[in-house]
Amino acid sequence: MDRFMCPICLELFEDPVRVACGHIFCMMCFEQCMTQRSPTCAVCRSRLSPGLKASDLEKQMRETNTSCKGCHSKMPLCNMRAHALDCSQYQTYVMEGIKSVTKDKSPHAKDIPNRFTFICPYCQEQNLDQEGLVDHCRKYHHSDPTAVVCPICASMPWGDPGYRSANFMEHIHRRHRFSYDTFVDYDVDEDAMMREALVRSLMDN
Image (cartoon, rainbow, N blue to C red; front, side, top):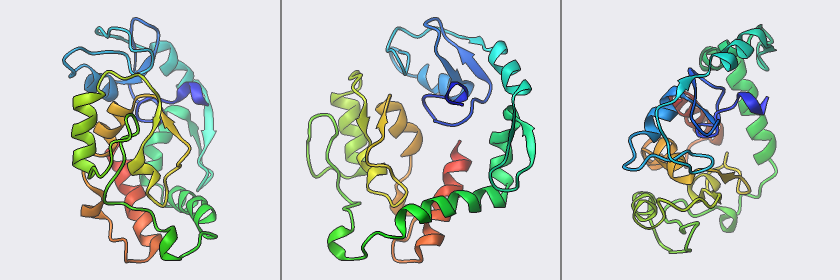
């Protein structure tokens, strides 16, 4: 299944585009990469030029059947991404997975992560708020190809502190265009909080 996943947004491909180096991205992700002053491939960092529609991959996705983990409806893989946005049973399935990971965590204050300031994953610069982290990385690390863990995602209840983003700069631009504090109330019920974050994440994609 990984071959059908965009390495930038980590979702199933949507309007896939193949670039000169052979890597494939969603059209939206590719267009975002091309807005850089010196566009580079999000995977191998080679110079990026206009890509071509990955018709062969689209054909494979049309011919590969899958089923929704929530409602169990069968469909071509190319339709799954749009289906997931509207399927309440799929969103419930995802929420149950999140709860199974978080239900055993201690509620003690010492276990609550700091969600207000972050450490740069490249140089360990400390006490950066979310906007400050984004600005810092753009200024000092925009061309660093090192795969790093996103400290913003890692601090969230649904975050994976072990996941390294292949292109951190693209990740923070796409995933952290808003502050979670604007949309998430950490004092409300955790289920409601995670459901809101999940829905917004799906909508962003």
